[in-house]
Image 1 (tube, rainbow, N blue to C red):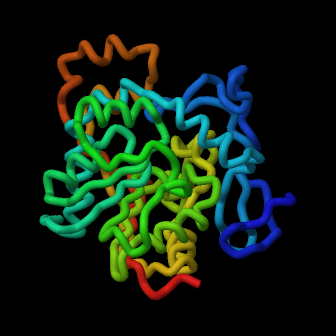
Image 2: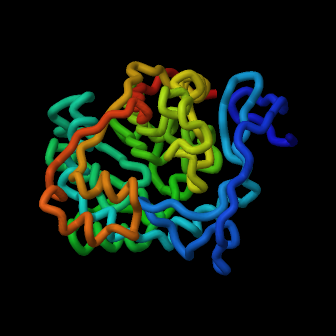
Length: 300
């Protein structure tokens, strides 16, 4: 393999899981549909590679950053909105690990989607800011939530001064970056000294990932990097952060949502008509990793 590891610079790269082919889109040759959906993955998954030196795992994707970003610009997903209340509750539980009171603090949510975490942060007193490439999601925030300070674009293009934010969150986002190192360097620059970074991402070192291997539900085309606790901690330390907490975290959704994730679109009407569909259920399979870190010295 000719790839180079972004974590240790090694070119000792081996194949972990071979590519998985599906029907492709004429608009996006690497996808099976014309836009990104949060709740439904699709498209061509390329080879999953592993660095033999540091164990970083990543997808073999030869696309420019602009090509990847275009996919998210068109993204929309009405199904995602069905669990809005539960998603806000999940976000509150995460933010409560920092503080119950965000008064006087600026929080930036990178990849803020339809404003789920921003709703939770606003209720907790934070001054909220968001970055989101999806035009559909930003229009939803503007029309339904009325939040200001939402930038429609990417972190790399975000116009903001250094040492500005007290908290920066990335909820199910870092695995989508084409270059996580570059994005963490930007975050380090715009975060205040001793500011907090909060990352939620699938844990490829978890028991579920090891059992299911290439069939693990988080191995999907949209995920370009797969971190373990070890590799994410190392990347954060290399970009100037001190890791303070690493833990697995569960989520609460209605039973209908969990069923939809298992059986998909075909049985959706039956699932939603069930008397059990609105029962909330908390599940923690141990394969979702929450990491809290703080900005240390000046990144060099």
